[in-house]
Length: 360
Ligand code: NAD
Image (cartoon, rainbow, N blue to C red; front, side, top):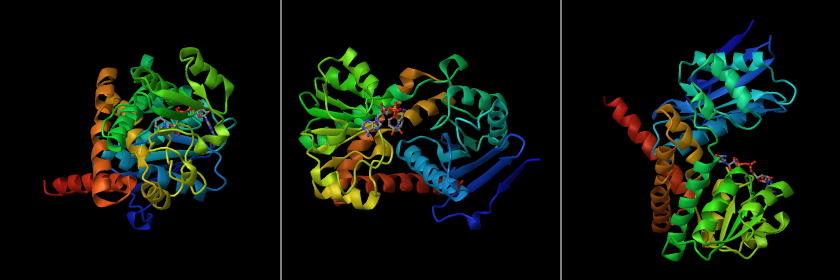
């Protein structure tokens, strides 16, 4: 027997979610939560994360937070998408099976396209293929199956143009040539970002905790300087590009940062949005909000819904430059931190579109 419960709106959290769906299937051991934050702009899109949450409450908190973040990311990027996210509760190394993934796919399908899923932490391409067998409401699938494949090149391009817009704000022109840029995390996105930076003539430094990731970049770009991953925040640099983990902008790092700009791909860079966004502003550091400049991955997924075209995805990611400029200009005009301006612009777009739909 399986069951699916939809909580009424009145019981949902203060973040304003539309719908939370709890899915369970004792036969396969599936326990999952699908969070639909907002569908004013379009279907709620966001990846499925598989994780060994200590409690179901922890899983719920994660899905609420992440799905809300997706609404903001889609809204600020001008996409006609809402925000959603799903979590499968359990150890991704031991609990996975074809049946579990396909059962999850059938839950996604039961929402009739209101939620569109994609790959996230703990999931593989193979898992997404199983989910896809039960539902068409999946993006980020391999190119061989008609999808857009790895979104990292588009994400890296968006980060690069966002960084250039930040350079324009900080230096009066958007050239990165000759600037000392530290890329923290030379993985998928970091690696492609280095390509753009080197092509423009930046002085690139990289840091990673794994030798093989560093070696891969050095093979392509022998002139890149490697710095110790443990001393990032005190490195002498112009631009800091966090492309590894979240929360690297915190009480310990911000006072030591020797840079004029922070612009990178990592999600949730500010340990505490309000406190650390303000700390960066007070230090005169231009901060390009992470969820705005790393939206290339989402843009890539979005273009799959329209019939995938990689050129169009890159072209669309180019828009990140202009939006970053607007956010940073408004931030200096109002004295508000840039992350706050970006949040307000996202909320405003959702509210305006809700209004026009109400008046139709
Ligand atoms: P990845 O796993 O390929 O790369 C991350 C790299 O960071 C790895 O090489 C890892 O070894 C390194 N790393 C981990 N801890 C580190 C530390 N303490 N110091 C230095 N390096 C460290 O991941 P990715 O796909 O390149 O994504 C990078 C970041 O961007 C993540 O936060 C991800 O959530 C975010 N992001 C990625 C995409 C995308 O399209 N891939 C889209 C939006 C956001």
